[in-house]
Length: 515
Image (cartoon, rainbow, N blue to C red; front, side, top):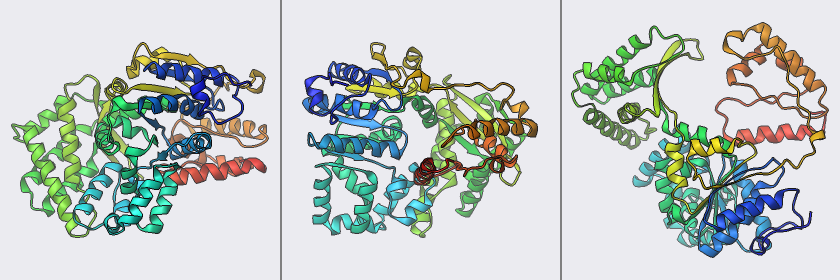
């Protein structure tokens, strides 16, 4: 198609032609961002949303001296941003970095293998640096010239997180420190939702980039995932396993008052969940009553005392050369969160009973956030402009309401670029994954329908299931044997690297007989 784009955008759009409806997509974003306005925009896969958003936002970002934070869910999407920036770089010099989480970037095997989430790794990293026990961090000072040259190099043109990691591995430098030093002079940063929407991570990150949200154009890709992520950020859980481990830990470190509280509290929770079959919403005051039954008149002061004790245990473990994971610390954070949210109607409290892999019944308490806008609205209202885009956002007004994006946000739905005759949709009657109907007979029926589709699909076929439990049941009922093609399956807890390899191997079968 003939290009009909604003002159400032043409300086950055790197391709000789636009796809059908892509010019409308770009113009909508450019006009909104140029007017310091947010935009909620839907476009099909294949439209070219990434290059459209970058080309539309960059002229405004450069003129107004703003940064572009491009948030997406996976590392593959982050690296796609850098790929497109490289195309732009051929026309207009621009810097950009994709960032992985510390647990993906960290070269220190002790820290990376010992942490069980990004927060624990961040805490462990800070402790190792303070104790002078990370050689990669030490080398930042020992190899000052090489380090500063690399910082300068990263601020000149686009680099992916994987490339930065390889460079640092050769030089034995900390990738995290190198990226952190480069951020203030980098125009486009591609990273996960957490950097923008997790309040604790966002605060630290904004210090690193040496700016505030008012100087940021925020692009949210695959934005249909954002409400769920925002809710997850504010949710928390405490299992009986963690309570038992915290009790042992308190005993090992001679914290008798904490050990006695945990023992009593655990036994009371076990009594509470005895009559629960799967999960049940509980009044938060039931837990407060249990706490007061322990003789604790000021729960907040006591839990802050436990939190300080847990922090001390972590320091002791690190001094002993052990993984500084404290169950006492984790328990205290949950209980403090319980106090903070117990009077907030945007949270519910749940007692959840489930079975372990060894088929043993156990339980956990959960604080479940219901309102994503608690995390999205403070961000959207503070930025210079927001570009919220996905292939599936309708109804747009509903999305505006649940995230509390500005009511005057521009809205646009790009028609699909694919001819309708190329799309076939069919609905199969007589199958369901409703809990009470998950029987071997039903799974056998589902397998037959899957086989029918696969046998009539000439190349690759994708099967999307309701949960890992449903997938496991389909496999147990013989799905693999029923198919005459290789079957690739996502595993619970896969790393992004494992996931990327899985997708790559699956795609490679499209050139053969399919998978």
